[in-house]
Image (cartoon, rainbow, N blue to C red):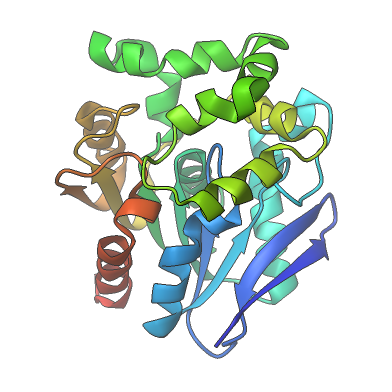
Length: 278
């Protein structure tokens, strides 16, 4: 099996998408977060394919080789949800497994809430449930400090300016410490595409959705890094409270960047959850 990368035109956007060609296997939609691209999932993708799954991982709107609308309104939560659903419609899947990391986890939760009949099982990794995000002020002071970047990204122009300085030093300082030289070059190329940083940050500038019914009915697995610098365990526990059939697994000594640094363990735990009868 191989991973194919192709630009796919959907009703409202053209996305660059990486996907495996094993079309007869159970499918998982994989959503990356900030400041990644589809290849943030690449190590996990290859392991999942070896375990008998088909994988589909887009560069989400505004990232890497996907289209980059210039307006903040183009990154409204409902539009991001529809991108994911339109992508799975394109591939012919009415139902699918869904996983997301970081902002991709937030979006995966939102898809599970808004389109519960489409999602068979949900896996979120190191990210906010929308209602947890909405009520961030109610969490402990430690988490509010960890969430400094949410305020920073809402500033006009300044984040883009600072993030490009000294060859994206601030971005790399807040990414995995285990990136290889070739991986760093890949990220630099993605971040340096026209309007990339502005589009990526516009995800945070867009007003979050107010969720009226935050409960998730499908089985949910929440994976968490014990040493996440941006999200405390309180966020994970709060997320779990919105899952009727939820499970929280905390990976010891792990950071926010589980997909890169703990890819084997992540793929194993995902596989076990997806193949279980729960």
